Length: 167
Image 1 (cartoon, rainbow, N blue to C red):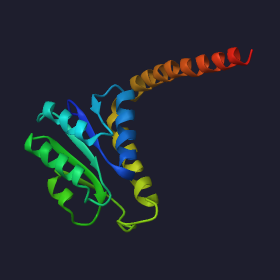
Image 2 (image 1 turned 90 degrees about the vertical axis):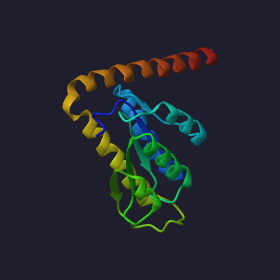
Image 3 (image 1 turned 135 degrees about the horizontal axis):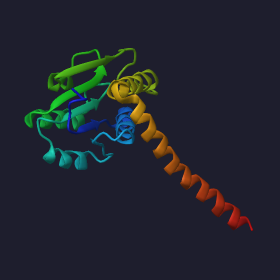
């Protein structure tokens, strides 16, 4: 589904924001059209431009985050394929999904730290990413090296400025 998508929207809030942002970042570096925003209002605005050629990947361990549920419902209204990464426990979020990818249901929804849920969701994001790039890995690797070199320029420039400031 993701390989055939025109654009991939990634969603997540709280601890589930990390795998959503990580997947978005990796897809952008590999030159896939992807969108993510920390601002859920802004993300819903982006949904105005989606259509049936797009896909949503929504991360919510609890499956209870209303911002994510409503966004997925809006995507379904637009005939967009919705993929959710969540725990294996019935939820309203699962009802919005075309595809459910389950992470282990080993943590309570209310918890001190989202250790297992965050790590397993990050692993799921990595698996989705690897599935996207596997057929064109050699070409994508060339582009990833180029992007790393562009970012290295910033690091070199910062070191030069710090050396200049010390003098």
